[in-house]
Image (cartoon, rainbow, N blue to C red; front, side):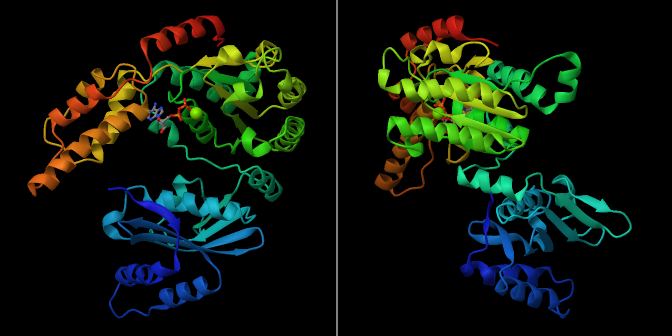
Length: 423
Ligand SMILES: Nc1ncnc2c1ncn2[C@@H]1O[C@H](COP(=O)(O)OP(=O)(O)O)[C@@H](O)[C@H]1O
Ligand SMILES: [Mg+2]
């Protein structure tokens, strides 16, 4: 079953105390820890909890003083240990503290105490003899302000594994982007320049945004999406805002800047003369951004052929990567994910369903699975009996769902790959 990590809501304080009560070694032992916890909460301590079906199964609390934080308490219900909750709590806490300007987190734990594995997993280092766990966050408070201003996030490294299948694309991104950026010393020794800019293109819903976020998570770099609609509405100011974004974000040691629907901001100038100001700005900003290593600009588009050719030239974009429709492995994983949330009859086979889904995007798989569920739901209401989603429901729903990627779109995409892809 899944758990959810979030801030302690006032309504959950009682449940949090109950968890601590249940964890007391002896029924009559002094509830010091509990009194301390309540007083910490009243003093504004940061408390992150793990919820399962809205009940509290784990919590971590920390007090903040200036740029330091002390982890006061790590508690996880015994039956929920060794499921990654500790690490997820620690990660949630780090995220919260980072935004409060904290640079160093310390935790004093007895050896073997709950939370030890989680802290070690999250890169905390014990100070020998004392078992004082400490971690220096990789961002300066000034950096956090810049990231917050532009709506940036630190994303989870698990996103990479959650993106299923797509071996070709994942290998390309891994070998050409993530590896050289993660190991700049080896790259420099060999004379490989890590990429600074990449454009991902392909039909809608094929995972471009997903891969951009996943690779930022893997690098552990802040992810900032620049939304042209949010930057500004007028053309002249959009160019200015872009310049400002590149200058400010360029000051960070590391950042992944993501611009989706890049065709909207960099269309061929002859077809959309009004956008010339923005395109000219990009032609200036990109080389400037590229001069300092450790940063990555990723753009994504469904319409690569409409982008201004000058913007795509080598020297501006290092890599142009086609992201194709989900392959069988990706479709199977998408079906497995959908089926896991439904009550199905036995013998339902994700791989078999996937084989009936040529040209499906993840959105299509979601639609087909919901249609099958709706069918079973209607049957349950009509008969008053418990119902399960049957193989027949699933096959019928899959047949009824139109593939978003038509054969024409697929061949257009393949032509684009042979024309534009550069890796
Ligand atoms: N390889 C994948 N494995 C699992 N889910 C995926 C994968 N690719 C895309 N998805 C899911 O499909 C949806 C659309 O993907 P998205 O990245 O937004 O596509 P795009 O940016 O190419 O339009 C998202 O909900 C995403 O989580
Ligand atoms: Mg997208």
